[in-house]
Length: 141
Image 1 (spheres, rainbow, N blue to C red):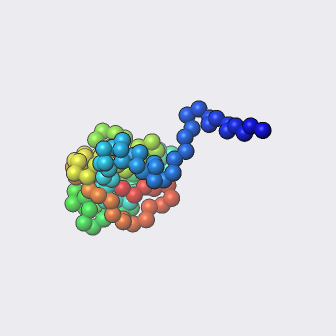
Image 2 (cartoon, rainbow, N blue to C red):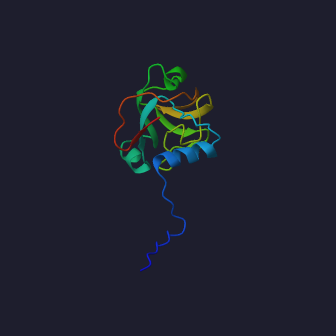
Image 3 (cartoon, helix red, strand yellow):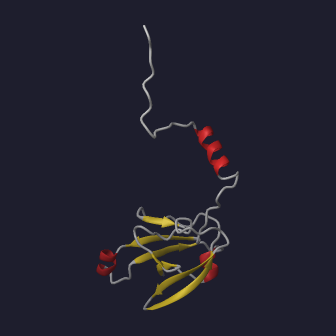
């Protein structure tokens, strides 16, 4: 009786956690990417919800880390961030520094609606900290 092993499906490989970690370390040359953060908790407001609430679509700032980058830059609870470096904040691009390709030390320009005025705020990306608890659809960055 001969026992044969079925071939793996093409393109499918399973790795243990330690093997995956070793692979990532070797690919990155041992370097790890630092996570960037704006130091805010925010919830995305889509265009339909924004229209119903007479608001501007974007990321509604719900909490600001008192010593974080957003506080230093002057961001306030209630501000709505509509873009970062010209990239519109939407469901595909939430207010997430790392998700927008920013690392600690990078500088970004945020377009912010505060009340009835729009302004540009320069912010230096920091590292993550615990900032408020965003609602389920929100993001902390």
